[in-house]
Image 1 (tube, rainbow, N blue to C red):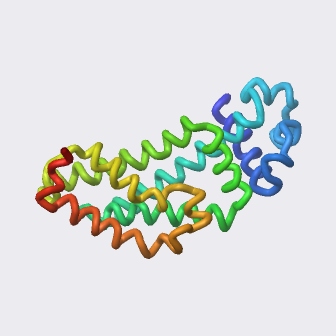
Image 2 (image 1 turned 60 degrees about the vertical axis):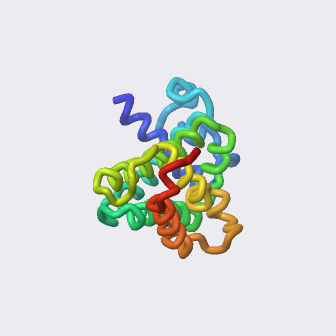
Length: 199
């Protein structure tokens, strides 16, 4: 029952944030949309920021799902899988920018104010990259090496494809057509003899 009510609260809040923005949405309005009192709403969420963070976390699940699905569809090879992962990140973020700009602004604000959430997002993308690399090592497509360290480097190189402000402002131009060339370049670097030694 509590889970259903929390889902109802988050759906009501998402709808409000999407149409009116965070600043123009009150706890009272969210409560009214859920047919409850504001006092009762505070039993579930301490404040509006807490609700916003929960909404964004739910939306991030959609990003992760889109990335996983894209990687599965890309097939087993490392470069296409990495290209699909970062491409899905770009496409999902662009869709949000276009379809729900106020929610996108909210997600940027929440991740800016909550470093732990930002670290969690980057950690999840890093984990996906690491899984792709480990699978490539098992198949012998790339040489054995520290997958975690390599994933960190690939995430650093792929930052323009996962950082929301970079996807909004596009300081390097349209990132979509740069994903595949960069991923092929990085994978080629991993297969070079010197790539196995980082010291």
